[in-house]
Amino acid sequence: MNKDKIWLSSPHMGGSEQEYIQEAFDTNYIAPVGANIDAFELDLENYLGDGHVTALNSGTAAIHLGLILLGVKAGDEVLCQSMTFSASANPILYQGATPIFIDSELDTWNLCPRALEDAIVDRISKGATPKAIIAIELYGVPYKIEEIRIIADKYVIPILEDSAEALGSSYKGKRCGTFGEVSTLSFNGSKIITTSGGGAIITATKTLKERAVFLATQAKENAAHYQHSELGYNYRMSNVLAGIGRGQMEVVDERVGARRKMHEFYVDLFKEINGVSVYTVPNEDYYANYWLTAILIDSAQTAGITNETIRLKLLEENIESRPLWKPMHLQPIYRNYPYYGNNIAETLFNKGLCLPSGSNLSNEDRVRIKFVFLNLFRVQKNI
Ligand SMILES: *Cc1c(COP(=O)(O)O)cnc(C)c1O
Image (cartoon, rainbow, N blue to C red; front, side, top):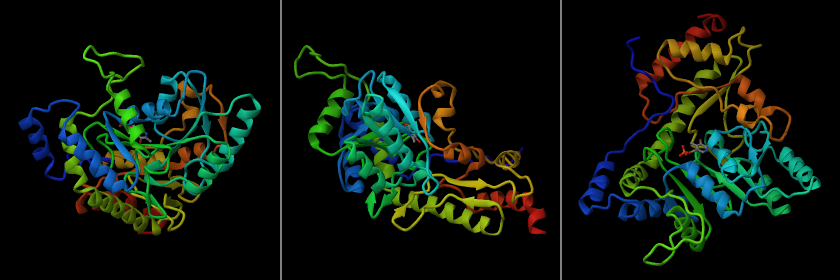
């Protein structure tokens, strides 16, 4: 194989990241404190338009801290969308709490309001109201923001909005990352913007932000000898990496635009191919960054071609693609926890595939991708 690899989603620098990193070196703030962190947080706050941002060293840390801020303790139950990356659910176990997995619905592939309410009613009848709802915006598509909010408020359960994949997405003009009692972002290498590794937690008040910073910096109280009354964590973002984040925030809109262009490219491509549909928002209230473009393959209409056939064909051409997130309730580590739903997530997983979606893909890359599909579906298309 001599062609360059086409990645699913790879880092895409803007250009000024190294200048901000240089500032950290020049001022010798090679530490989890400094001007880049403050400025990166401010950039994010301005971009989101609501909330107080605390920069952390991963999205996973942000979710863990979010659960702590929401008061989740050992023995509590936490509702979580089953179809997601494991990092959404693992912090529930870090807290010694119990995950209760909820199915997806077909419009947004996110939390199914009916399964969510069924689960809440059933858990309450079994003796305990769940402590939090972890709602995901899968591949950048907002969940049913209003329906889920109504249920959360009805049973007085706070939402932890995991917007790791949804920076730049919005619902009715309001940005994802502002819909939860706490919301979280990730700046992992594969995400919309990256700091190589990093994350953030968004809280409604400055007081909660101060609390997040306190817990993320070992819960050191104000004393020369480092007094501790509470369990702390080492979760703060490095000032060096926040420099990358500042550079990335200068180009975030371009990055979202380029991902959405990739989505359009696939919508065009599959218009002419029977049995393949592109995961798309249900109506114009929803605005997705399309972090990853995903497709569903109905093999009854594709002469037996499946998601796996496509994945392997792409791989032969050195093009990366990936199955959808395997639902958590089907994962060996989580299989014995309660699950509520009708196997929608499982069906999506069995038929779906994520395609190369990076903001740095070239025309030549698109031609190579298109070529694989046109070849594969040649019989159907009579070419
Ligand atoms: C990437 C991701 C995370 C974790 O973020 P890290 O920064 O890698 O720790 C959490 N949830 C979802 C849905 C993700 O895609």
